[in-house]
View (cartoon, rainbow, N blue to C red):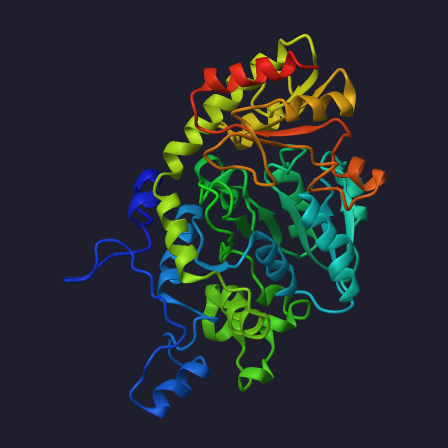
Length: 426
């Protein structure tokens, strides 16, 4: 479907039914798949043939949805995972092992920050965090001989910093490592990082891609552009024989699909975290309207941001789509058609006023979720980022009074009216 425009890919890509097959992508709700001979099954386990034998590794429903996301991002191969956290974990650990190191933008979702700052460190992989506005000189100083990847978010959650692709991609490639970007908030509707030189993209499909808060999931997409062979010693896991698969060399046998094949054959085999076929089915339904919903999210969010900006009780408002915002110029460069439906703001009364205002909302719900059809708010310092200390909160761009507001696709005036009445109560 690569010749079609994005709207058509959202609706049609991934599943092309043959004569007599279901028009709608079916749910292959089966753990196992039948073959006629032992040799047929054996060739699948040896990666000599493609096919399905156990849903923990691959499933037709999942593969169709992964193919759609891959087409939307402009990649060569993709896989689904059980969550966005699993996607980010796999994306890094597919090329890292004990003794390795990664460079990360510090403006990350709290769970991702914790994953890289603490969890993978226990596995022997260290991370150095840099501010998103770091100078090129300081960014280059963060690299070490054992650095294997650079990681960032297109639009960070919840600080809403726009990643300067040119700066981070150049540094990654100058040091011979891939650039990995979480594109959850922008989605491929508003940004396709591969067009800016990014090598690997991840998603929490739980957010805008699903769009209805029905299913948790993640995805990894490979551009196929990073030359693993050129850095063969550094990425021996891809360029040297894998003894767990009879000495297969992924780059030689699978070419541009090497990275995703290894992630499936090794990490998914050993760790699980596959997305369920039913969740993939629901995700696909969400993807079919993504291009429509993202436009409405962005339109509503800008209206709400402008309303808040003019309210006497509001201390500050942050949206990359707002003219004058510190990320406005970067957003115009990398996301000219829209950013996302998430904005942040703080009240003049500080943290206590923020909490009181949130408790007074009627239409807008307080939930942990973000980026679906319904408007919702969260106080990250008290909720998603509460595992962070004060220094880590500031490094992640999370102020104590910050309210993360995920603007939905309801009528914008109804959303604003709910904010008005809640602000009157503080």
